[in-house]
Image (cartoon, rainbow, N blue to C red):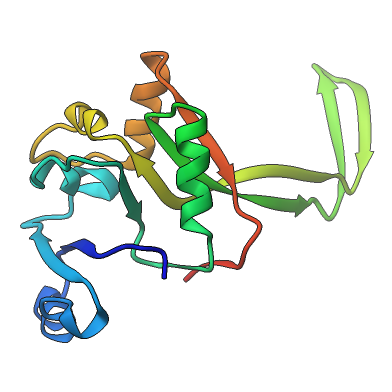
Length: 169
């Protein structure tokens, strides 16, 4: 439904079972190929083993379930001229105690059971092909490393908030 018809799946642990189940992807309405890691290369390292795509690439961690509107994310990515867009999810964390801020021995502030709101990385990314040039071939490299490398080079990295169902298994 999202218009995805080509899938490259990175496999390592129990790769035979995964490949046997999905095969060439025909039964699922897609063309599927596999990138086999001899050793775990991190969340972005295996992208360095792939042929460089011609178009924007969607990357999803294997333990994510979502009803994200991928076409809306792609439009956002393009509207923001981003080289990499990461989906983010609002996360609320309540400290069940009073938090004390100090300066040396002196108490400067007390917050009773504060709630912190942050965007977290949702494990879903859109990447432009040129971004893959930053990934070292055959080395462990995480998506967070790639994002930080782009930020350090002052390149366009956008955050797309997820409002739909999202679950990190």
